[in-house]
Length: 319
Image 1 (cartoon, rainbow, N blue to C red):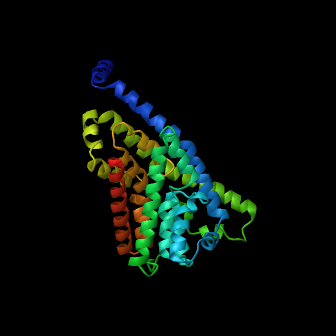
Image 2 (cartoon, rainbow, N blue to C red):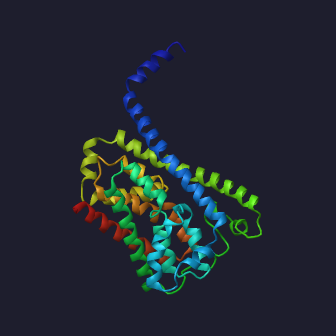
Image 3 (spheres, one colour):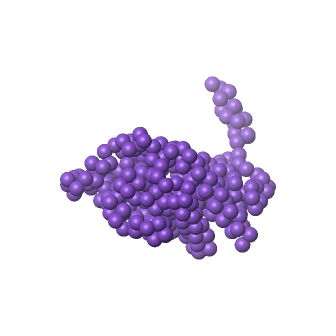
């Protein structure tokens, strides 16, 4: 025991306390900036989950293909839904008769093209309107093109035969339809909304914290020369950030703050790719898609999003 202080003193020689302090500062800055937007996002999502039925959304969207894809891609302006709950909602919309191409356009665009994410992106990038326009424009292009190609390649609803009785998201559990039932009292809906908000907040909080930690670690651990060599490469930077977005599965209301932490190291196109690709096709969304839709459809949709997103990001780098 007498040697313990000496051992600790020797160990402290190998610890870079400055690096640890920088990590804590970067991590806290990312989390604290993102939390208000995440909280607002889950509150809106909880209200929609319990007070707005999919039938209401279905009535708003036109039935004709060309007249439905564009409004569906812009519907997030009215219904700002988080990407973590989109797949179960889309599955129910398709089951109720909404065309698959319309539902896909809504699923890809709504988590990004909405007031919450727009404000978060603007704030994260210090009111840089160019990054906001690039993100929203790229999202709109991908959503519309994916919806159009879906209408060409797939004629059915592409739902799995056994997906109609299961749900793959905490915010849309087995009793979600019951919660939104018109027979439920107002107080009951309010209680359920609070329950959904708290559950979704802690569920997304895990992804936010993980992504923030990875972003902060990369900033303090990776040599600046490596970041610059990868981050400024026209092609490689895009692929790295898209892969990063897929793995960490961060909420669309918070990913802008993580992307902004790489602003000095990575190209603008790669940052846009990170903020667009992640909310559309990430690890958790892919698993939910595979649970609800046929594998071939999920693969084709993922390829469409990947190719168009990568191409758009490359053009942004050339701009």
